[in-house]
Image (cartoon, rainbow, N blue to C red; front, side):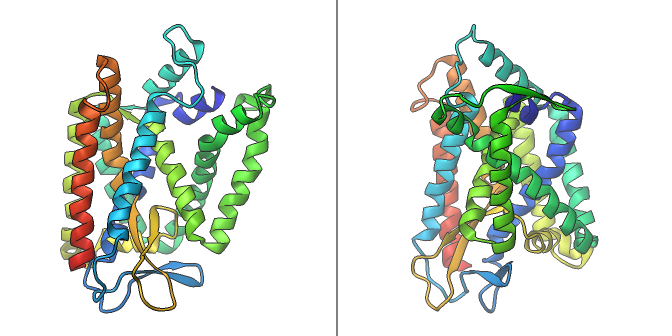
Length: 341
């Protein structure tokens, strides 16, 4: 419960501003899914330490992995929406203290209408700063993502480890500035830090995917939409934001700002899926930018909450419709990228 309060936050305005800044990097990650499809004369390379991560070449054919990413994204969204609605092993009955504490923390992370406009403004300013000061900002962003990835990984596994250890480490100790913290936090923290440092030095694609998955669940359970109006505003603004920074920015800034930033940041802002039919000695990948999951995922979580509030079976309600629409859209996207590059 203490972790929920920390991760969901108590300082609403400051937290929203910080999340808007971080979400801009996730939005930038959406451009990574286009890198493999933008006129590459040879396989694109997203640097992974000393070994580059290779995406499909223009001469490659449609691969089953182009559709496997749809299944992966759908499963992540299903789990994320379910966990955002009811955290694992938490008593969510109306009279439960846990449920009331979680709902209070979740309400602090609700996006309002003005927040969607702030997201676009802060994200755009951050993209321009990273674009012009790439060398310095890449270090800052890497440190930021390593820190957040550690928190996200800890938040992901905490309830399962707590349940597996039969709550033996749930006793709280006072920590300056943080208040009471469970002992399990101090057990998981070094493990998560080691996992992040291992990814940092090896750039393992498996660890990259684990951290990316943790970040997705972290944001889907920390931020939620307050209404359909907010959801519409966010996705419409993100739509035009993406169009401008991916396709129009080059005519103003001389380069494609979004793709330059996305390929210049060496952080876990993408999920890598190996191509099944790739030829050659090196593994080739298709990928999903986190922005392609998180931003639609906020609407998916909202639809599931709406079904739950109205007592509608999620298999027959808004959640099912939104998930089907997302899968159809992503399937078309995978076909176009895999076929036409």
